[in-house]
Image (tube, rainbow, N blue to C red):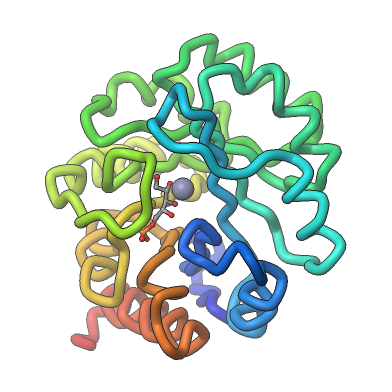
Length: 235
Ligand code: DX5
Ligand code: ZN
């Protein structure tokens, strides 16, 4: 299982979350089955061709995958009108949804996600400052700090986001919030060390998992590197 339950209990669980964006869409359920023994969350990237210059999947694909998997579906909505689609994604089987703070109406979207029984995530692009996230930290379960500009897998990790990750974690700790701080973009067994040190605990990885000959082994490698950094042991 690609999680490490630390002690004390208020320290957030380290979790590697494969992004299906880099999997073979022609045999998606097989790709998911291949990593399932090592994970408990799966990252589902939804793009609308407006918020980002790419199109991916909608609720029907989530519903199809749901029939093959009991994993927690961590659904990243890179779309300009999440209010229209939150309920269809919930009905399709999404467990958590993450909306981008850049689309606005954030308080209303958070309330809608709560009403729908979704775990609530809020994302920020690399150039969106901490201050845009700060008012919503007490209201959400997860903050996603994008470490690439969203739209495509396989991009290079942006180290300039590290201070914002540290700001989110420090603010959560200062307020006694047990917040998941997720990172997404260019995460592998090397970059995970820096984001763990900054305070992230949920690591989305697409190409570093599904473009490897051994995706399950890649999940383990990333988790081991994160756990070693947290425990102060060089990997
Ligand atoms: C990017 C997506 C990511 C993407 C990450 O817009 O939100 O989830 O799949 O891919 P890698 O890990 O290859 O950067
Ligand atoms: Zn994503």
